[in-house]
Amino acid sequence: MLTYRNIHLKDCCLKQVNETALLFLTMPGLSLQVQKLTRHTMRTALKKDEKVLIIIRQHWIRLALPFFVWLLAAVLLILFAGTTGFIITLVAALYPAYEYLNWKHNLWCVTNVRVVDESGFFSRYSKESPLDKINNVEYDQSIWGRIFGFGNVDIQTAAEMGETTYQLIHHPKLLKDTITHAQEEYKKAQINKQATQLAEAIAAASKSSAPSQQMVADELQKLFNLYQQGAITQEEYVTQKKMLLKN
Image (tube, rainbow, N blue to C red):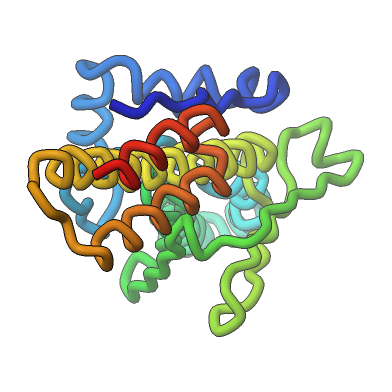
């Protein structure tokens, strides 16, 4: 069987991701609880073998302005309009309540295969970006953002999908690092899948009395691709190549 070199995460990424994404991956019980919670949080159904790594919303500061406006209006109405003002205040409370519902349903979910963007309470919007289609992820924080823990996240995907900027994200660095980690794990899983398929093909070829030249050529090409991707060492590449040519 083939052996592969481990892909290590950077220390800076581990500090942020270990507390969330890696915790879900390494604790099946907690992961199950997250999946149950997700069904009550996300509208998008998870695919087979898909796991939620993290769910992030906009920062609570997004609700500060609607609540402050309502509170100021409530004080003024009650002071100057009495009972009528109190009734108007109760009706006006629908405004911050509506903003809260929108905030609650405006979320970004990172799974082991994609990034899902959902928003809207009455109306619904959903967009997903496969991990292998994401080219770059960046975040930026102002001074106030660093103090209160919010910022903007830019996700650049394939050319036809373009670039999307998400504003006032809670813990933007955590979102960025989780996506980066998920991409690395996804790439590693795909390489391991290819390597397994190659190993099975080599085993099948070794049992065959006379494998076709085309089959040997195809397996040599797969083997070379794995070597180029860093999934196998040069020594492993040479060994497996000799086995194929010997057959």
